Image (cartoon, rainbow, N blue to C red; front, side, top):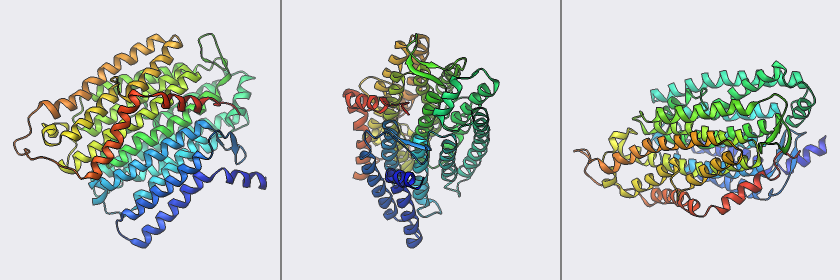
Length: 497
């Protein structure tokens, strides 16, 4: 046992680096006792070191700490994504007036690192207990970050709503996991899968467990009908934190959800008649996911049309995108899984970019109301041009990375004879174009307000970050072979214990 733990620690270096960096940032913050960019620089340095250790695990397939977590190409994909998105979010926080005006010093950096650590563990978990503990690590850090600007009333309200919804969904999911453990006698998802494949899977305990676990994961990924916290929390939280919740936290939810469903309730990874993996007996979880996916797309897109706040619009946009992503889970095969990873990669750049533009605009206008951005293209043409790239990418227009993400999701559906789902998703993409273009219409086609004729300029640093997000959004839309290869290699060994 002792030797196994020591061997596990040698492969736990990416996570250990984040823990050490978190402690170092906390100590530095206590020493400085003031807002300082030094803490953020230390955090980014630690993340880069962690990135190096992740690269050293390429091709590795090994379970750690008595089969609590696993190191495999699938988990490494998400760790790369988490590190990149976290670095950008820390930079966003340094650029945000909301964070700078808060009464705190640098606590947001340590909380962001804690959330990233939880996300790492969520992507690697193969044990029900570890899945829950890692999800709670992410959630608790999220609750505090959502109410970080406690001097702002709507921020405190957002945090309270988040805690209430989170506590309810976590309790439901934990009870479901306890039922699965009581029924199967194991908390390892591979062992649970083996047990269910050899017994009566139509037992009500299993069916109820699936529904209740779906509620827990659905809350994390902002899926309908577990999405009610999303608009208020996204609007009330500081914009960098909203970005973090929309990208990193949501991706972590998908990471653990994909692994849970595609291992626990599959009989075999051999393809069935419809091109999907063989699902255990009467456990039709793909049908439940399909319903939630359609509901998320429809409600997310249609409610977004009526939003006047850009943050709330992007909140409902995130709900719709969780619906698109779940379509890959419905397919239940390697092609669908690879399509989900491609989509998540694309979503990272275009969503980070869209929220960064919101930060830049809010810093100057002190509002995120869409109507206040009238004629902004005449005052800040570069920022609005970048926003156009991100908006078109989010809607899935060709020559952007968002189009590539949707293309592979739709291709996976059509390949599995789920054409009706692909048609619904395509129609929803058309609807989404309406509200994304609405933002650009206000910026480009409306005249500036009478008291807002002056030009708005930004420093080189702001523009550089915007370029670092806009260029990949276009580049990977035109040359997407590296993303495809990366995603396919990440799922090549998926499900092999």
